[in-house]
Image (cartoon, rainbow, N blue to C red; front, side, top):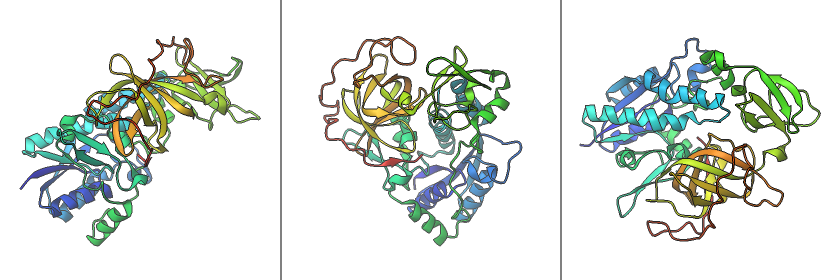
Length: 406
C-alpha cells in the first residue's frame, strides 16, 4: 500500500483530496502547516484564510472522521523568512507580489516533502484545482483543471519536476460542486465551509494596514503627483498602493484616476487615466519551465493575475533565464512583481516574475530604448520565429482555454 502525505488546510478541497486517496487504497497521513498566528482574530478572520485560526482544528476533525493520522508542523520561521519578509520588501519597493506562489515555492511543498521523507511516504498530495499528466519522456506537465472557474494551476508554475514527480492532485477532475457534494454525503464537518479568498496573513484584505504594523518604519509619507508631475496630494507610504488601484487614493478628482507608477526611489505615487496604464510588453525573470525542457520563441497565452482569462502574446527568450512577452493587445494594471504564466491551451508551459513593464506606444509598436519604468530598455529582442519546442511540440494554434481563479 502506497503511503501519501496530504497537505490539509482545514478546507473542504484538501479534505476531499484526503478522502479520495483513502478510498483509492492509499495509506493517508494528513499534515497541516502552522505558518501564521493572528494575535487578535475576528470571527471573519477565523474562516477566511487557508492558515486561519480554526484551520488546524478543522483539519484534525476531518482526519479523525476519516480515521487517518494527523501531523502539525511548525513552519512559522520559514514562512516569515520565505513569504512575509519578501512580501513586505516587494510592496516597499513598489512591486506587487504573489505570496501564495512564494509559499508554494519556498515553504509548503518543501515542508511536505521533508515530512514525507520522515514518515516514509513516497507521495504528497494537495487540494489544488489543477491536473498533472506524465509525458512519454517522463516529464510531468501541469494542466488546467476540469473546473476552470476554480483553476489554481497559475500558483503552481514554480514547482520543480522533482516535486511534480511525487505529487498527486486528486480533485483536478472534479468541480467545486462535486467536492462539496462528496463532503456532505460523507458527513465531513467542513462540507459548507467558505473558501479562503484573502491572503492568509492579511485576512481583512488590507495589505497596507498589515505592513504598517509589520514594518512601521517603512511607511514614510511622500507626494502624490499626476502624470505631468504636479503634486496633488500626500500618501502615507507607497507600500499601501498597487498599480491600477483607483480606490482609497486620498485625492479628490473630477475624473477617475488610477495609480500608474510607483517611484520607490523618490517615494512618489503617480496617478493617471486608464489609458496611462496601458502596457504593450513585459520582461520576465527567473522563469521555471514546466511542460517544456527549454524555451523557444513563439505565440503563447499569458496570465499575469490569478483571476483573469489568459491573453495572447508573443514570447521571446532572453538572457539569464528570462524572457520578453509582447501582448497582442494593450493590457491594463500589469505590475512588476506579479507572476506571468504562459500557457498552450490548458497546458502550463512555464512562468516567471515580471521584472519591468513597457507602456503602450502610439502605434503599439515594440518598446523603444528608454521607455518603461525609467530603466534603460535592454537591446530589442530578436524577431520571433515560430520554430518547434524542444520536446517536438510547437506554440502554434493556441487558445486561452480556461479562467484562473487562485
